[in-house]
Amino acid sequence: MTAQSVEVAWVRCSCCGNDIPDTPEDNTEHGTGANDVGFGMCVECGGDKRETGTTEAAVRKRLGWAGEVFYDARIKILEEKLTGASLEKLHAMSYAQKVAIVARLIERGVMT
Image (cartoon, rainbow, N blue to C red; front, side, top):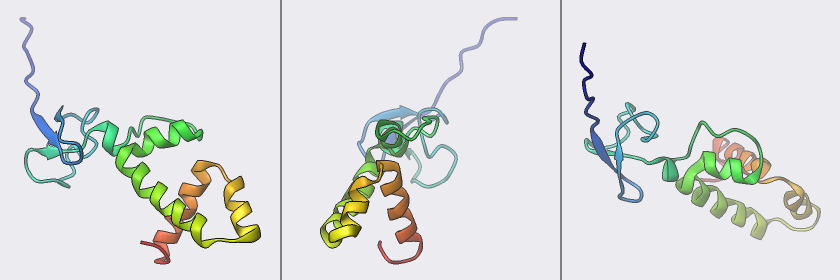
């Protein structure tokens, strides 16, 4: 029996433009059909779903660059719109809790 080399297809990240192997570990959209042929999304942009924990660093890594930008912009909007006790409550929340609040607001159609 001889060792055979396995050829891996490469795709371009639709977010940052870097070339990445088209594997489940490297392409967060591998096999989803979410992009045009030849495109995917790298772990840095699309998030590393293998990351665990609720620390801000872990949540940010799990979200990836694109998710961070998405949620950070909406958290900032909340900070600008809330006042008094509601703003204090938001500031006391962890990053993971803020992301969860924004996600719920989006699901309910209150925020886009």
